[in-house]
Image 1 (cartoon, rainbow, N blue to C red):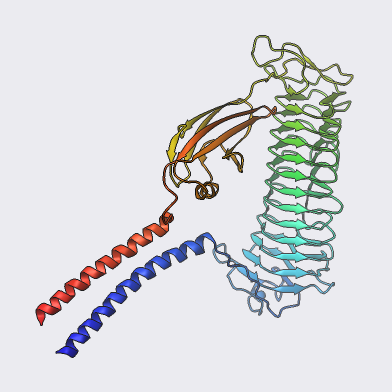
Image 2 (image 1 turned 180 degrees about the vertical axis):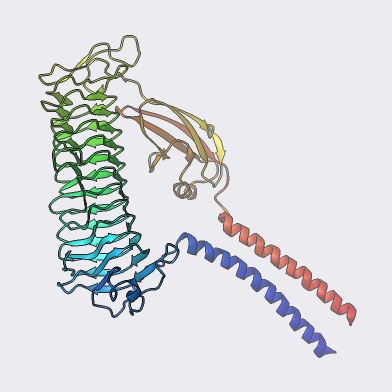
Length: 555
């Protein structure tokens, strides 16, 4: 009887241990999953080294070197050449040996991927690491193309291909170069230490997005020659011979028209941030800063372009320079701190419109040597930080024209007048509110038609945090402050707003720390887990007690 009773006790303990294990497993698996999804440092592109050192040549029109032949080779990575199951070449290291291109694909319309390969020392007919010629439906992804004789990636007579997330460096000619190729996406690549970064010649309808280019030795980071209808967006180009160039080889022939250049960062380049010789192009939202010549340069015979919402700051010569270029619209740009002038128009630069631009702290704001250029629209002109007129009727427009330097006699007849500071109204949280551990949400209303930036500080500027309108105070900074205060201490949140003319407004609220910092101070997850564990143990204790009573009754 005792042995049977002892056996039941052991079984009860095993059941209890099992229940506790399940609870702990649930807790820690939940925590582990959070860690792996939020902070996963595992490199999913770890290079697998094959023994392959010979270049790969595939011509899908030639038996014995086509894709059918390739599927039987030891380096082939699988697939059937369809959109859902493309051919794969991956995880290869290929040395061109100074005599061959490393990977060459010709005359193919099959779906394929070249991924995670290292190609170097390529010097075949195209002098490149990866070559595509007359190819559609290819993807060149996550490769390292370095130290090839001329180019990292070369493509010609191609369409509908993707070149993405590659590292292309130390190639003496353009890192990525394309000829007569359409509908290509070139995105998220890093290109450095080449003559040019990305170079397209006679290419239509391509997207050049989110690339980083630096340290070109001869030309621009992105260069389009005779290539219309392309999108150049959200690229970063720094420390190159120039930023972005769009050029008509045959002046005025219309071969580099209707491109868009949007939201790029072009800084610290030896020539201009953007050089355009083309028509009907939109240049908007770009930052052209610290370039050694101009921010934006409209070169000869550039007509009907729209240049808007750009920041042209601290360029050595002119923020925006028009050479023999007419009928362009330049509006809503911030033009500041440029070495020679904010804007300059050469002779034969005629009938251009400048409106709603902000000229701040340039050596000279504007020169106009053209004819019939308008420095205001029908309703509004530009802001000049050296305007000396008045605004007697408070309509936001100066009462007298602003003269433009140059022999054209141009004037801004409707100069923008702004002497006011941004007004900040804090609607939430209320002043002298009690606050706890969690950082509060804030809602502010800023009255300012020319708002540039806003930010807030916590307790005397220890934390200076740029912010968008409305949101939540940064929790990390809030937590640091929390640990230094006791219940009843006050916290001051100071909000600032700056307009495009440099006028600064501010307002503040005082908050009172309501919850004591003494105590365990655990975060939500840990507190919840402790409650779960405590509840589980209590349940286990109750179940164990019931089982014990049953055993006593049964015996």
